[in-house]
Image (tube, rainbow, N blue to C red; front, side, top):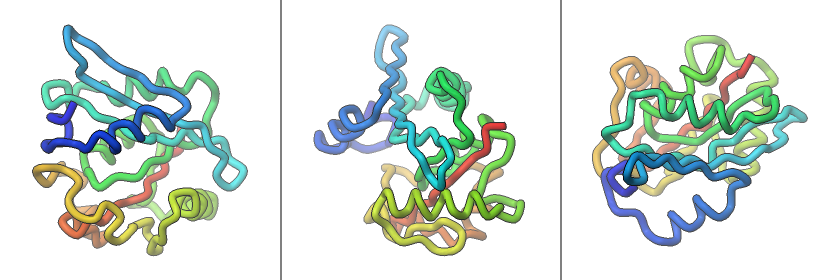
Length: 175
């Protein structure tokens, strides 16, 4: 699954992603092509599905794998799906699962602001008003800087510097 990140991952990072979440999904097609981990959380008294981690092999990216696995993970009703990322393609994948996503082009509702603040507390990090966590990853998490033509302008507008390790806390409405 290292090819999903464009770099080799340390054992501890992989171990943490597969042992701490409530649910782990593995997709095989003669070989392991995707891994997704989720945990149900309460943020601001709302039932949220938190994406602990996801890795999809390059040949499977852009084919709806994230949406399909996430819909399976939503066995029960969740108000929001939350994640942290520095990948504009991950942001776009979440956009396809949700009716609205924040931060984005719309003004962020108070409940979403509260959820993002609770998520930051849960992750033990500080955020700016847009949900950007400066230097969260300590550098570029991926071997090659990820891009998405529709999302790159938003990331630039939000002030993310992926090479400095900036991350983004993202929340999407499921209704």
